[in-house]
Image (cartoon, rainbow, N blue to C red):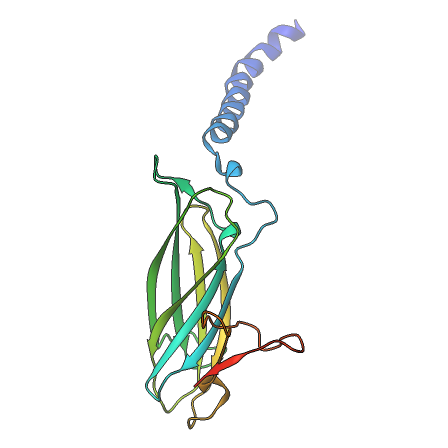
Length: 190
């Protein structure tokens, strides 16, 4: 007699339990992003700014190719796709956007596990009469991972720190760390 009273409860509860189980399994089957995750790997982005004149500055950036996801192009090697953008704000706590720009970076490699430095630049016009805060963001479009760097841009007369760019003596590529080991040869671009 007690079993007959519980029978309607089981008829209602069974489809609910089955429905919950199928939704989770279906989501797990279609979500393959774990295959592309880098585990603890983060997208390392380094950036610095160089004032070429009172009106024009250049943002230099460095990415590590080991942090990017490279996809096969069907016989032409592997390629990655990264969106790099900057946003300029008048101060650290401001939400007022003064300027922004973005560009796509396409890189090719022979294998998916290359480990090199990807260095590039993006020009920026700036107002002479104000300091800025830049947020520079690199977004790996294949891995869906991004990293941001904040830079303070100081205006002022030529001769300020950001009017000088330390570069490697061979190749002329910018150095992203002002602190170099003793005895390291460094050239400076003005």
